[in-house]
Structure formats: structure tokens, C-alpha cells
Length: 305
Length: 264
Image: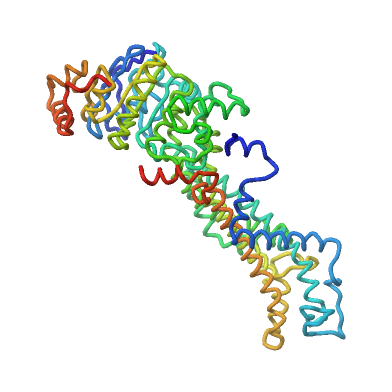
């Protein structure tokens, strides 16, 4: 009979972590929301119910109808189509800025914890200085130099949240680096890279993943906020934040319209958070539900130790 | 494999925590390092491995089969660790990575030093699990540390230490965190493995009762200095120093008689 170790090696097509995520209700909801967003984003590249930029002066501020499920704006644009098209902006910003945040966070986190004392303490000070800069300020600075674009938002949010991840992962790496099993692995002859790959990264992963899923959620909010203020993606790019900022001017007259972009942002943020939570639990074998007859050993462990 | 430690001095922030310690372990000898906590015995073990904590420096001489280890670059020491020196640490609950399967951790030294291929991983892990008498080896290699008892986990740690058949085995208080019945089993396992592989053993403990069951010769440390050394029986029968007398008294207090010891 083969064991879990070999079974996982032989079945690269069925990742264990995804199966573990889908065992949890939170994971299922998160995956469904994120998959839904991805599909809508992909479809919107080729097709939207109506042209989101079409101005129609004869159908301003329409209520929900078969033709305009979410109604229309003050210029007669179809809100549903606009949000549909804006999904790709949201998805792109969320994923790209999380990638930037992960790179910034890991690089600074590792440099700030594993290098010689003088280097790592300088890095720690640098992280603290960067944290003092509000993300918004970084975005405005970047926008002033390079102009507002999707990339400005991605880089600004990526750096802004990346340094937060760096601070948390720096502490985590330092904690794990002092763990007995790291010393034991060194005593077995593991070099620094292997220690990092086999022991440090897997053991900071739970904290890292939660931070990253938060950063995806924050990125969605930040994009909306920056677009709302006029420092976000360019006006040719549909964005939930811009829609929200246009509609909020009329919130006292047409309150129902504001609900839709707000709802879209809320559901997306919720999806990322639920997915991140389930992923964190799935990567830790201690939080997995025991199966494959592991129960007897578990019982023994609690009795003896 | 023989180990010669000469005039070892370990300083932390200008303070001498180990001061001029020296001892020799002949090939196949079972040697004991004993002392109260803070006597510098664990630091001495870490110095042999070249794994002193940041800020601690060691001077003197540590020779493995005549070859100087002290001052060698970490890369070269990493090649010695795990292959020629195997190490077992005190607390089996924290000495294993909680996220990796038992099997994967058992064969890690073989992958690092023996060029073990992935396809051979499972079989090698099962063989090691059998060697240290873990129950149900085929299945236990797929489990995680939290699913094992403390004694089983220490067996895993011992399996890792002997995976490459090292000539020298360092054991830093390997039984301290275990209850008495498990202690006896683990000591028996150590005794069997050391004689089977012809390895030298350096056994660090604060418990003379434990030491007398496994070691033939002993060095007593107090506050980083040598107090006395010699065969275990001699030290037990006629301790010359008050620190040693204290350790003997502590061993007797745990309802143990010298006449029963030494065998195991």
C-alpha cells in the first residue's frame, strides 16, 4: 500500500490543497466567487450585454428592467454592462497587486530576518519608513510621474501592502528560524536555501496567505478608492470605483443605483477573504480533519504526550 | 570515529560561558557529558556541530578523526553534519517540522548526503522506521508529527540522526522530555544502534542515573569548567567534587541503586 507521501507525488494533477479548500464551506463560497469573477472578466473581453460606454440621453436614471437589470446612469449608460466590464479591472488589480505585494513582502521579509545583523536591522528601519507612507500618497506620486493607469494602482497597492506583509513575515521568519526543527535540520546538513524552502517558507505560509488574501481584498478597495478620487485607472478603463464615484453624487436622488457597484465590491472582498481563510487551514496538516485511519495514532498522541 | 576537544572556550558578549573544556572520545566509545543547566554542556555540543547561536564564538580545537572542525566554513561543516555526525535533540515535540511527513523527514540526511532519489524515498523511509522500531512502518511514514506520541517522535529523531550511519552520535538530553518508561526504551534503542553501527556516542544529560545506563566514561561540567572526569563507576562510587556529589545524590533520590545500573 502506498502512503500519503508517495500518493501525492504520483498525482500531480489533483492538488491536495485544493481538495482541502473545497472541504470547507468558506472555501467553496470563496472559490465559487473567485471563479465567477474570473469567468465574467474573461467573457467581458469579448462580449458585454451592452456597450458599457454607450451614452443614451433618452434613458437616464432608469430603474431595473429587462433591458437594464441594474438600471442606467445619468448619461444613460447601462450599469450592469459597465460593472460586467469593470470586473476585469478589479480582477487584474487584485491579482497583480497581490503578486507585487508577495514579492516585496517576501524579499524584504527574508532580507530583514536572515542576513547579518546590521543589514537586517537597516531593512527593518526601511520597512518602518515605507509603512509610514500612506498607499494613497505612493499612488498619487506615481500617478504624477507616470500618469494614472492600471499599473500605477498595481504598483502603489503592491508596495503599500507589500511592506505590511514584509513586517509580519519578518517577525514570523525570525520566530521560525529559532525553532528546534530548524536547528535539527541544520544538524542534518541542510544549507540555508534548503532551510528556507523546506522549513521557513512552509511554516510562515499560513500567516503569509492570510496577509495575501487580505491584500487582494484591500487592492479591490484601494482601486475603487483611487478611481473614486481620480488617481486610479484611466477613464477609458471601466472600473467599479469610478462607477461608485459617479453615482454617489446622486445618492440622495437615486440611492438604488449606488447599491450595485458597492455590492460587487463587497462580494469580491468577501470571496477573497473566505478563500484565504480556507487556504490557510488547508495548508496546515494540524487543522485538517483526520482521515485515512490516522485517528488511532492521533488518539495515542493525545494520551501519551 | 574519534573526537578530540581541546581547550574549548565559548564566549557570548565577552562572557566566558565555556572555559577551557577538553575531552577525548575514542572510536566506538560511549562518552557522557554531565552538568546542571547552564553548565555549558549543550553549547559544547552545538560548538562541535558549528551551530552556536548568533553572537557566540568558539576558540580552541575540535578534531574529528584528527581533522580540525573549528573555524571551517559553514559549507564544509554542512557536509559533515548529518553524514559523519548525527544529532538528537532534547525535545521531540519541537524537533520535527510540523508540516512535513515523518517519511520525508527521516530520509532528509540521505537526500542531502547520499543522493537519494525520489523514487527510493518511500522504501528508505520505511527501512529507517523499521530500524528505530516504529510501529506499522509502512503507514507511519505518511503521517505527520502531531499524530505521533512523544516517544515515537524521539524514535523518528533518532532515525534521522543515524540515517547516514554517522561515525559519531551526539545526543543532547534526548530522554529528558520523556516519561520514565519511554526513557528506558529510548536508552535501549540508543545502546543497540550504537553497538550495531560501531559509532562513538557523546551523551549529554543532567541525570547521572540515565548516564550510567548508557555511558562508560564521563566528564562533569559546572559553570563552563571541567570538574572531574573518569569512568562512570568510579565517579559514582567516589565523587571528589561537591557538584558531582550533588548529581549522585539526585540520582539516588530517584530510587535508583548503583548496583542495578551500568548494564542496560
